[in-house]
Image (cartoon, rainbow, N blue to C red; front, side):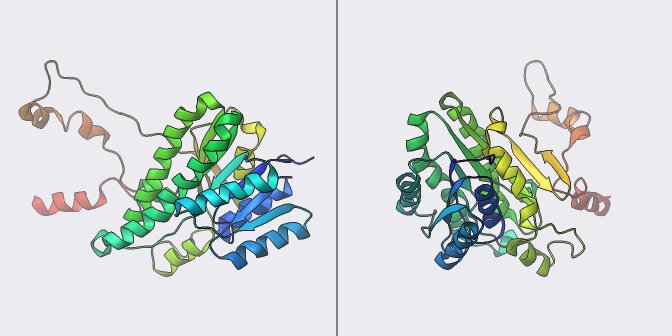
Length: 295
């Protein structure tokens, strides 16, 4: 008996890297998997590997950035397997550019795949999950949503996916549909590209995509029936949750705040709790330099 026996699962961007690892691991646990990738040859290769290991899978080469393509993807799962139980929104693109080198074209391209490519298949899947009153959606975010140099557009797209996760979990709870996200750290083409361009330490520990796959299997399983609205990060041997955005260090001033009040009290109240900027950066590391120059 597998943990995902007979569950019908769509994995997007599953021709390589993390998506391939998710699809392979889920099929190994008994799931029937639709392996989606715009590179049809890679999708078919993964399907062949799954079949060689005794699993069941079919390929799909539609683009999830396209509304109709995403619809065909979900329809294929329903037609082939009789329904859909889980959707893994893994498909994504990535580049390293500082904001002054970004363009509206590069922004639109990133949002089309990473944001619309998460929304489109989810919206189509819900046409089936909501009437059956059960389902599971697993999104894929990134630590870059917390701030990484030269990843502002990529990070913004993944921040949108995180917000999707929180909101959809609330909206879909009444339909018994769980929504969570994975924030993975693994050796992929994206990570290699960042390392080659100097945006990641060459000595930073690298774990294969297969190392992250177990959390996807768990979140898709009935063992996670009470888990929703969470972002789970798996980095090396550390499993953690990412905190939700929330208010901190509230300061109350009777009658409301004037500019003079804020000038007088900001540094002694909120100024004592300034948040670190970036995933691993020191608190306001550049601001400290500016204050030294000013003095």
